[in-house]
Length: 186
Image 1 (cartoon, rainbow, N blue to C red):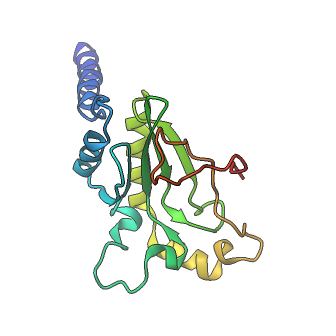
Image 2: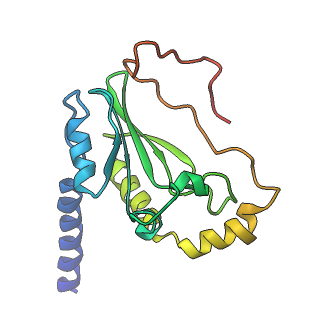
Protein backbone atom coordinates (compact mmCIF):
# COMPACT_ATOMS: atom_id res chain seq x y z
CA UNK A 1 0.00 0.00 0.00
CA UNK A 2 2.85 2.39 0.83
CA UNK A 3 4.42 1.77 -2.59
CA UNK A 4 1.09 2.47 -4.30
CA UNK A 5 0.69 5.73 -2.40
CA UNK A 6 4.28 6.77 -3.26
CA UNK A 7 3.71 5.93 -6.93
CA UNK A 8 0.54 8.06 -7.01
CA UNK A 9 2.25 11.00 -5.32
CA UNK A 10 5.20 10.73 -7.71
CA UNK A 11 2.80 10.67 -10.71
CA UNK A 12 1.06 13.84 -9.49
CA UNK A 13 4.36 15.64 -8.86
CA UNK A 14 5.79 14.53 -12.22
CA UNK A 15 2.62 15.66 -14.00
CA UNK A 16 2.85 19.04 -12.27
CA UNK A 17 6.48 19.48 -13.28
CA UNK A 18 5.78 18.36 -16.84
CA UNK A 19 2.78 20.70 -17.04
CA UNK A 20 4.87 23.61 -15.82
CA UNK A 21 7.45 22.92 -18.54
CA UNK A 22 4.76 23.23 -21.22
CA UNK A 23 3.31 26.54 -20.03
CA UNK A 24 3.32 29.45 -22.47
CA UNK A 25 6.11 31.99 -21.96
CA UNK A 26 5.54 35.01 -19.72
CA UNK A 27 3.91 38.07 -21.26
CA UNK A 28 6.53 40.48 -22.60
CA UNK A 29 4.10 42.52 -24.73
CA UNK A 30 5.25 41.04 -28.07
CA UNK A 31 3.99 38.00 -29.95
CA UNK A 32 7.49 36.57 -30.65
CA UNK A 33 7.75 34.34 -27.53
CA UNK A 34 4.25 32.92 -28.14
CA UNK A 35 5.09 32.18 -31.78
CA UNK A 36 8.32 30.45 -30.70
CA UNK A 37 6.34 28.42 -28.13
CA UNK A 38 3.91 27.18 -30.78
CA UNK A 39 6.69 26.53 -33.32
CA UNK A 40 8.35 24.25 -30.73
CA UNK A 41 5.07 22.32 -30.51
CA UNK A 42 5.06 21.73 -34.28
CA UNK A 43 2.92 24.64 -35.50
CA UNK A 44 3.88 26.80 -38.51
CA UNK A 45 3.43 30.51 -39.24
CA UNK A 46 0.80 31.49 -41.81
CA UNK A 47 0.81 35.27 -41.32
CA UNK A 48 2.42 37.80 -39.05
CA UNK A 49 1.70 41.46 -39.61
CA UNK A 50 2.73 43.18 -36.37
CA UNK A 51 4.24 42.74 -32.91
CA UNK A 52 0.81 41.93 -31.47
CA UNK A 53 -0.79 39.52 -33.97
CA UNK A 54 0.16 36.26 -35.66
CA UNK A 55 -1.71 33.40 -37.33
CA UNK A 56 -0.40 29.82 -37.17
CA UNK A 57 -1.71 26.42 -38.23
CA UNK A 58 -1.09 22.88 -37.05
CA UNK A 59 0.31 20.65 -39.84
CA UNK A 60 -0.62 17.50 -37.89
CA UNK A 61 -4.30 18.17 -38.64
CA UNK A 62 -6.13 15.31 -40.39
CA UNK A 63 -3.28 12.95 -39.42
CA UNK A 64 -0.89 15.17 -41.44
CA UNK A 65 -2.73 14.26 -44.66
CA UNK A 66 -2.95 17.85 -45.91
CA UNK A 67 0.73 18.55 -45.29
CA UNK A 68 2.09 17.20 -48.58
CA UNK A 69 3.61 18.82 -51.66
CA UNK A 70 1.48 16.77 -54.10
CA UNK A 71 -1.80 18.51 -53.20
CA UNK A 72 -3.40 20.63 -55.91
CA UNK A 73 -6.08 22.29 -53.80
CA UNK A 74 -5.84 24.00 -50.43
CA UNK A 75 -7.76 22.59 -47.49
CA UNK A 76 -10.35 25.37 -47.70
CA UNK A 77 -10.96 24.52 -51.37
CA UNK A 78 -12.11 21.10 -50.15
CA UNK A 79 -14.30 22.49 -47.32
CA UNK A 80 -11.70 21.46 -44.73
CA UNK A 81 -10.22 23.55 -41.93
CA UNK A 82 -6.90 22.68 -40.32
CA UNK A 83 -6.43 23.56 -36.66
CA UNK A 84 -5.52 27.24 -36.71
CA UNK A 85 -4.90 29.97 -34.14
CA UNK A 86 -4.77 33.75 -34.28
CA UNK A 87 -2.81 35.33 -31.44
CA UNK A 88 -4.09 38.80 -30.54
CA UNK A 89 -3.22 41.23 -27.76
CA UNK A 90 -6.36 42.89 -26.42
CA UNK A 91 -6.69 45.14 -23.36
CA UNK A 92 -3.22 44.13 -22.17
CA UNK A 93 -3.84 40.36 -22.38
CA UNK A 94 -3.01 37.70 -24.98
CA UNK A 95 -5.91 35.81 -26.54
CA UNK A 96 -5.81 32.76 -28.77
CA UNK A 97 -8.67 32.52 -31.26
CA UNK A 98 -8.66 28.88 -32.34
CA UNK A 99 -10.53 27.38 -35.26
CA UNK A 100 -10.72 23.65 -34.61
CA UNK A 101 -9.88 21.03 -37.19
CA UNK A 102 -12.85 19.78 -39.23
CA UNK A 103 -15.14 20.76 -42.06
CA UNK A 104 -15.87 24.43 -42.69
CA UNK A 105 -19.53 23.65 -43.34
CA UNK A 106 -20.74 20.25 -42.21
CA UNK A 107 -22.48 18.10 -39.66
CA UNK A 108 -22.22 18.64 -35.90
CA UNK A 109 -19.70 15.82 -35.55
CA UNK A 110 -17.19 17.11 -38.12
CA UNK A 111 -17.84 20.86 -38.19
CA UNK A 112 -14.97 23.18 -37.28
CA UNK A 113 -15.81 25.51 -34.40
CA UNK A 114 -14.16 28.66 -33.03
CA UNK A 115 -12.81 28.91 -29.50
CA UNK A 116 -11.37 31.99 -27.79
CA UNK A 117 -9.23 31.62 -24.68
CA UNK A 118 -6.74 33.71 -22.77
CA UNK A 119 -3.20 32.47 -23.43
CA UNK A 120 -2.23 32.73 -19.77
CA UNK A 121 -5.46 31.18 -18.46
CA UNK A 122 -4.77 28.16 -16.22
CA UNK A 123 -6.44 25.73 -18.66
CA UNK A 124 -4.74 27.04 -21.82
CA UNK A 125 -2.15 24.26 -22.13
CA UNK A 126 -4.80 21.59 -21.55
CA UNK A 127 -7.08 23.09 -24.21
CA UNK A 128 -4.15 23.45 -26.63
CA UNK A 129 -3.07 19.83 -26.10
CA UNK A 130 -6.64 18.57 -26.54
CA UNK A 131 -7.10 20.57 -29.77
CA UNK A 132 -3.78 19.26 -31.14
CA UNK A 133 -4.67 15.66 -30.19
CA UNK A 134 -8.15 15.94 -31.70
CA UNK A 135 -6.78 17.47 -34.92
CA UNK A 136 -4.28 14.65 -35.32
CA UNK A 137 -6.83 11.91 -34.72
CA UNK A 138 -9.49 13.00 -37.24
CA UNK A 139 -9.91 10.25 -39.79
CA UNK A 140 -9.48 11.50 -43.34
CA UNK A 141 -11.57 8.62 -44.66
CA UNK A 142 -14.43 9.27 -42.23
CA UNK A 143 -14.56 13.00 -43.04
CA UNK A 144 -14.35 12.49 -46.82
CA UNK A 145 -17.09 9.84 -46.70
CA UNK A 146 -19.31 12.15 -44.63
CA UNK A 147 -18.66 15.07 -47.01
CA UNK A 148 -19.55 13.01 -50.07
CA UNK A 149 -22.28 10.69 -48.83
CA UNK A 150 -23.19 11.64 -45.25
CA UNK A 151 -24.52 14.43 -43.10
CA UNK A 152 -21.71 16.89 -43.95
CA UNK A 153 -22.85 16.94 -47.57
CA UNK A 154 -26.57 16.83 -46.86
CA UNK A 155 -28.78 19.77 -47.82
CA UNK A 156 -29.97 20.17 -44.19
CA UNK A 157 -26.50 21.07 -42.85
CA UNK A 158 -25.84 24.73 -42.06
CA UNK A 159 -24.92 26.82 -45.08
CA UNK A 160 -22.39 29.06 -43.30
CA UNK A 161 -19.31 28.44 -41.14
CA UNK A 162 -19.66 28.58 -37.36
CA UNK A 163 -18.21 31.93 -36.20
CA UNK A 164 -17.88 33.97 -33.04
CA UNK A 165 -16.83 37.58 -32.85
CA UNK A 166 -13.07 37.81 -32.26
CA UNK A 167 -11.35 39.96 -29.66
CA UNK A 168 -10.42 43.31 -31.16
CA UNK A 169 -6.67 43.93 -31.21
CA UNK A 170 -5.06 46.80 -29.27
CA UNK A 171 -3.96 48.27 -32.59
CA UNK A 172 -5.38 47.66 -36.07
CA UNK A 173 -3.57 45.34 -38.48
CA UNK A 174 -3.74 47.99 -41.20
CA UNK A 175 -3.89 51.78 -40.85
CA UNK A 176 -7.42 51.85 -42.32
CA UNK A 177 -8.92 48.88 -40.44
CA UNK A 178 -12.22 49.68 -38.76
CA UNK A 179 -14.28 47.15 -36.83
CA UNK A 180 -17.98 47.12 -37.46
CA UNK A 181 -20.24 47.14 -34.41
CA UNK A 182 -22.69 45.00 -36.39
CA UNK A 183 -20.22 42.07 -36.44
CA UNK A 184 -21.10 39.44 -33.88
CA UNK A 185 -21.82 35.83 -33.10
CA UNK A 186 -24.08 33.70 -35.22
